[in-house]
Length: 95
Image (cartoon, rainbow, N blue to C red; front, side):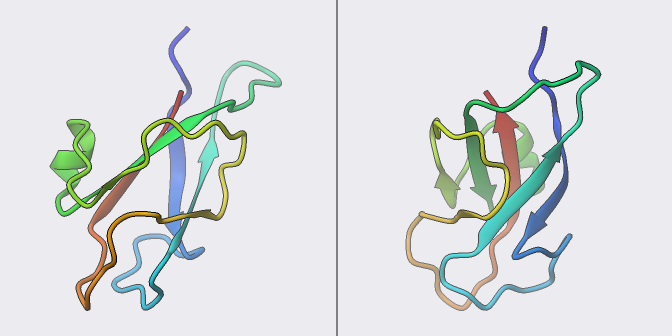
């Protein structure tokens, strides 16, 4: 069975924020699954300057690689130090 897709993506508890003024923003999402009791054991977060890059599996701002965690809330950005520019798109994937 394919992994459940994340939904209700948030950054600093906001959906689609226009700007985030913290150096290590935190990401959260929901998992929706038709399987009762399904849980997340690991995830990967991509942060890209463009949505299409995330969807194609490229994190040009940050790629967390595999994170061994069941958490899907308040996962902190751990990429390169950001300037005044806002983060682009994010895409968490359940592994």
